[in-house]
Image (cartoon, rainbow over all chains, first blue to last red; front, side, top):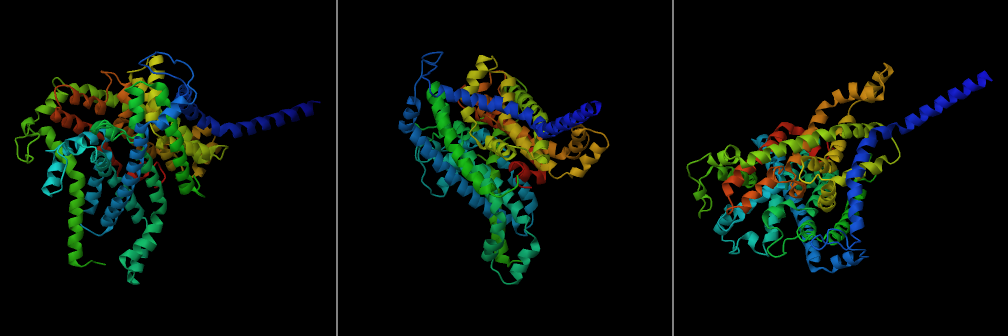
Length: 308
Length: 274
């Protein structure tokens, strides 16, 4: 009897230990997970609920009842929303591509054995450290018809709109794009340069001794080595430009008219200028769905078969 | 292999152009902060003027309108960084050392939190914070910043934990320290540089954030980028004050990046690239 009981105790203890082991990781993950669920999942659930309600804060302090899919249908049929969507795609595709190409070019340039390259690398990261809102202020000043950029462009005989680069619906979006390109091209350059430096110098030299042209070395040796790095930073930047808000707020406030509204700015405007909470929540959820799809595509491409 | 002279000259010219494009806007705004306002918008732009510090004096000494925003920025960014640390160190340890159900999903979820649009949180946060009476407080911003500081710090600190051999903490555990003891006595001291790097980035991201304080801060709690917007509204756009305040906003992140040196790549890619 006594023997049995103590045997049972040992077994019980063993099981408890196993449960402890099994749950151990969750003790470490738990605090951050609970906190993030509280500050991420709860607010998003909150806006999912109100996206199916009629609620404009200018009319009523409380929701006026269920709206079904009305908010979603109104959003998709709203020409401003469609325009914001097109602007967002235009910006994120072109800006990311341009930043990547220029960044790669600068990385290759800095990879050459030139004097002063190390100092220049340290200086070059400066634009990336600037708060996007502040970068917006700086360029708003530079884009004035009497600002430095306009002065430079017109002295090169490039025709500019009289109302300034940001005052014209045709050029304002490119003004915003250029601000972002200025800020983040160094980011691509610095990271791609680190990728280039990680390729052993002997391999490159061996190829050159064997008579490989610069283009062939680049295509067959450097580019394959940059693939993972490139995917990661393209993903990061594409998403950040897709969510672009600060620069637009500082430079144009979505104007002139609605010509530079992106999805983010349009959401801000509908929700916190017009106070149409139900409608803006629906826009938020349309955005979340679009972005979830894009992020998943990126993740499948970049982390396929990779240990995390 | 040395390149022929014409090629080298061409490369130096290109290098010069690159430096000009990326540095001139910053230098120009620095000049704007010390030029007499009469030379702000002349055509052609005025290069020679008598520099003055009176704009900085107005912004930060008397009446010092920007000083208040500077203090808010410091409070919010450093508290947000400190608050994220205990959460992220623990989670980073679990991701680095254990295999458990949902590990990969959680890591990708944290990554996507960092890539997702901050703007979708704006409306629910304004409403929730006003219901619990926190709108306009430092605390509301500090809490909201955790949506990016915690996932970011977890991913970066994890990449540093991965480099510490497991044998070291196993030795500590054999010597009688528990799992938590081993983390505190062995893992954290050894990866202190990593934790500092993660904190510095978390600080910069919080410092540079303008989306959340745009709606969550009140007159007395505005951080620098949002406070600067005031200069656009009052009596015409006061560009010299904007430049002086912007310069002070830009300086800490620049200095931090200068100190971070080779860790910049790891931080900016959330630990994915070392």
